[in-house]
Length: 186
Image 1 (cartoon, rainbow, N blue to C red):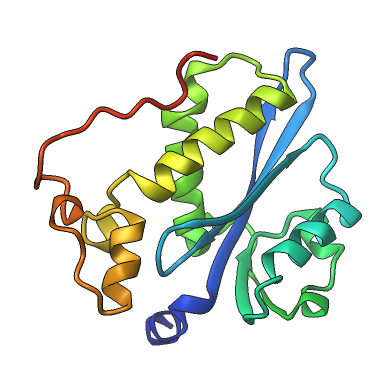
Image 2 (tube, helix red, strand yellow):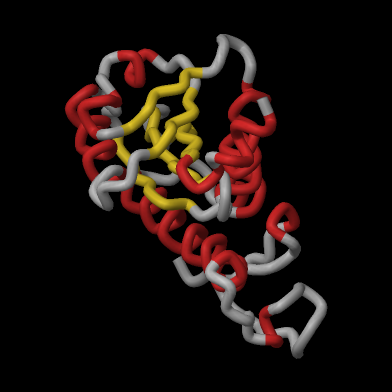
C-alpha cells in the first residue's frame, strides 16, 4: 500500500518505453527510468531494437551504483525476457492494463511527449537521442516539479540532505526569471 511506497521511495524506480516513429515508420524505442522520490530521470537510452541483450545492458548501468532498487514496470515482452535479480533489482510488474500503477513514469512520458516531441515530425534516431538529452537536462536541473514542492530536483535533493537550498531556486515564484533555451537550433 501507500505506506510501503513512502517508506521505500528512495529505492523505487519506474521504467517504461516511449515509442516514436521515424520517417520510414520504424519504431524508435526510448527507455526512461525515473526515481519516485526525486522525480529525476536516473537513466535513459534510445534504440531501434530493445531486445534482451540491450535491456540487460541498461539494467547493468542502472544498477551500477550498488544500491538495490525496486523496479516498477509494465508487462512489455522485453521486460519479461530478463532476470532483474541478476542486477540486484527487485522486479515489481504492474497488473495488465493498469498504467495508473506506474503513474509517475506515465506522467513523465506524457510531459516528454507534450513538451519535447510535439515539435518534431518523424525524427530519426540521432534527433531522438538529442531531444532526450536536451529535455532531460532541462527536466532534471531547471524545471520545478509540483509533487516535490514546486522546486527543482537539485533543490529538492539538498532539502533531503538537510542543506538549506539557494533562495533563488526555492520556488517557481522567487527570484528573477531567467531565460534558458532547450530544444532550439536543431
